[in-house]
Length: 107
Image (tube, rainbow, N blue to C red; front, side, top):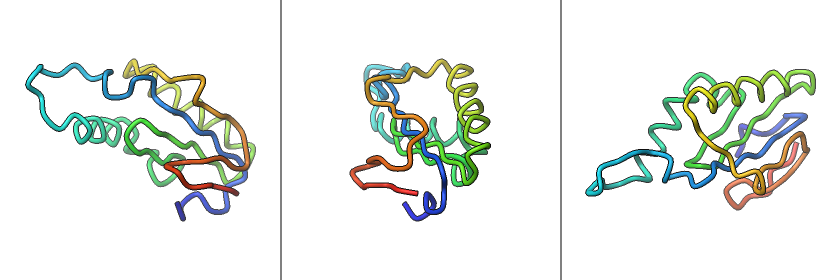
């Protein structure tokens, strides 16, 4: 959570039916870890810089308001490329604070 400190705008996104978006064999084990590895691979260049990702919860951040749209565009481009779907009822865009992984995150 410390990496979100000093950001002017935050967007919180939740992947729709997160673990169900990965095609796996019926006997597949440890789908949560597999999903996290996939998310780490998809967002490897953004994690720690413009994004934080934990399983199907994503946070896009920007230290300058002007950069927030660019960071969101990059995140959405990757989501589209990998055909990941978001649950719009659990997404909040361009705010100064919200809950992420049970913690209140503020600028």
